[in-house]
Image (spheres, rainbow, N blue to C red):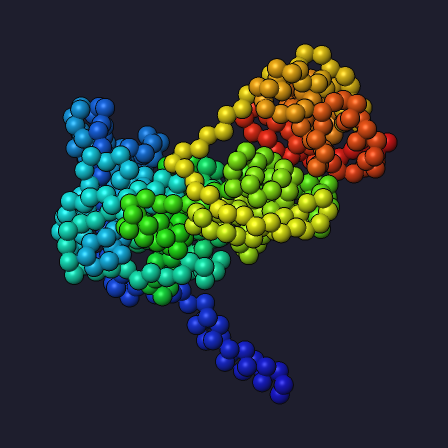
Length: 462
């Protein structure tokens, strides 16, 4: 009897499990939001004839290459070529959000709606640091997207992309949020949303929707080995994009905070060397003289744990938090210094259009072995100190120990400090090392080429 009841119970539960596994229906979302997604054609000078206009990124190995090469019209030498992208309308009077790389160097921009109407667009503003651009067409009563909150987005949530991949208008692809807060090389101000929704060239600037039909991201980049989608797409969070768009609309430019420090990630070994309970924060490896951080008293080897009340979990968090802070704001900065937490008050500066640090050094020529580090080092001469604008330092002439090699120390590196203690001579270095217990990780502040950063080196147990 019990066996029969158990079987009946399982049969009753089957429809519930089937309903739970049912895939979402995107049709209503596409019908409502699709008309607000536009195709953008930005004409750019072409040095010579090419097949498949607007599709310069298709490699010859791609199956589509032969199709477009045979059937697409050839572009005569010297004529302008259209660069295809996507965008979406954020106001009914014609403001459109897209990527800076879609319209950045364009001679002319044409926007085509889903109802086939075409408009010439003008650029309101471009922000290359976030790859966001705001353009406008002269029209009224246009359909517009609903703006969502990317901060509420969850990993694993369903998302939908609409755009013009390879020029195919109004293409719809679906996937999930693969990750949040991704940092990409050379992209310090955007915590990217990663998605496996198929995104290809031409999707750039198009919207990424949640299931509520709200835009939560601007499709911007893909990781690819063949020019097509590999399930690794990246979108700019809509809160970042809208903040930039609002500034571009009101002032034509974007202002960002800046404090004048060079930072690096806090590894587990570096955390141990500085007495931190866990690897978190942003380690200050250099401080710009006369900058906001310098005026406030922030020092090299400080670990910034909080900025304006916001936790700095990793070094990539700090540039975003600082950049989002209005210049002139007075904020509290929590730092870890010499084994204890300290609060510093700082007035945020403004980021210039371009910043470039210049530093050059020349390694020494004669060295002395430092056994505990597995290095041969030499002291900087007076001319080298003046050129580098440092009080002291030791040049690495040779890397002999495996621990130093594992720490990635290299010939020509200049050791400026151990932890918080500056190093001016080999004698001073050996005195500091005598006080260090065996097997401990120490943090070496190293100048390499134009940058300074800490390397964690574990002292020999012997």
